[in-house]
Image (cartoon, rainbow, N blue to C red):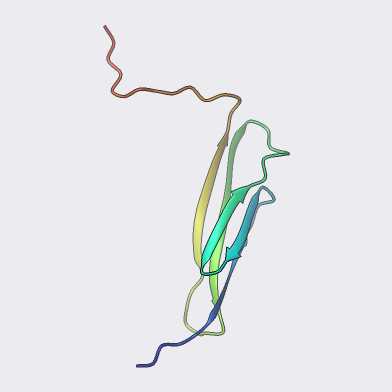
Length: 79
C-alpha cells in the first residue's frame, strides 16, 4: 500500500489558548493577560484535511490560575 499525504490543522475553542503549527509539531500556549484566579477548560482539536475517513482528535485542556504556588514535598508525614 502506498502512503497517503495530507495536510492537517489545529484549532482551539478558548480565547486564552493559543495554538500554532510548527513544522510537524503543535505548540500550545496560554494567553494569561485577562485571566482571573480559577479553573479554565478548553479543547485543542487536530484534524486532517484532504483525506477522508479520519476523525478529528480532541484534546481537553485544563488550566488552574492561582496567585502563588507552594511546593509540596511528598511523602508528607505528620508527627
